Length: 165
Image (cartoon, rainbow, N blue to C red; front, top):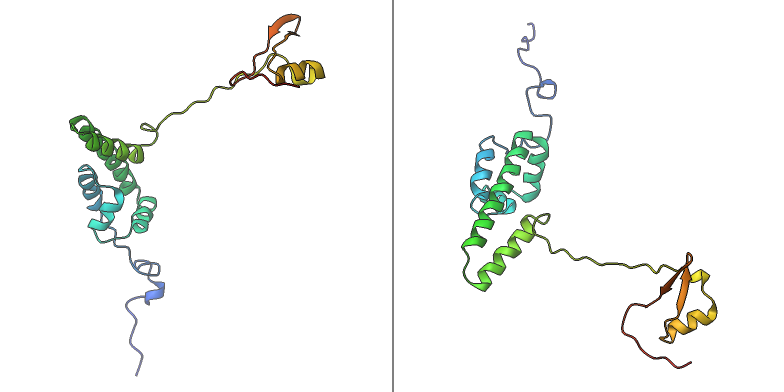
């Protein structure tokens, strides 16, 4: 008796089957769901929990499915809008501080504290000063020094103190 003719490919040769491992739980309807969830102020991690998935899984979906990545981008913008509206509606100090804190974490490029430090450079290089001039500056006396043929008064930063030598 002749063997039966094989009508389907074995699973390891069938390209229609999943390439290996567990199939993805991703569903296209998650694109709208993430926008709906985050537009209520919830984070991406909270969305992951609401669909019973891990945060890392959701980040993998962002990389693997461009339409989901685009939806997450729009969802983040919607979340920032919700948080800003909450800030504008807030009346109490604690509620205002909480909204600002959330915005600083959700949109750090737009809601960060900016700290600047100004550095002033002396017009005279210390390598050109004599020991006597350096001692005078350290002692709190500010001699006039020449820099590029102009007279400059050097005033070191910080409070002035008299130092005995």
